[in-house]
Image (cartoon, rainbow, N blue to C red; front, top):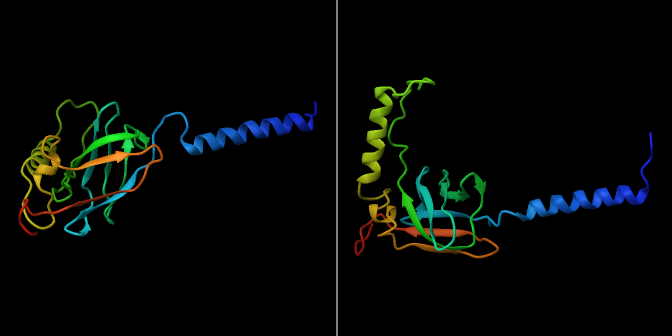
Length: 173
């Protein structure tokens, strides 16, 4: 078995080390980490609220789901992070209040069971016409045309703090 020289081994270790560092810095895909929190009436938003960064300009849409502490992390398609640029921010109410069917969807069956069809209708109804009042995000935040929220993702990423009120404009929660 041939032995490698010390300089060859150092060269291999150096190249591998540079590749690890480049991967850790996110080099290549151009995405920046954006984590944040959504506050609804000054409190963490309910778990399951969907945060969408809708692209303005030459970027791609990113989204994330709020956890139990009101925090989220954005992804672009299946990749962690967001392209630098300006975004319209949309918030969709959590659908966790709609019970998920326990009936299994069988592979190869073209039509889902009736329980899943009813679930889809209830989720759509909730998202299209959410309840009003404390704990619910007004429907205006769900539309690109009516949401007043924007966010600029700089080249180095940053934390996003999104604060909204459950009350319609001009009213207290």
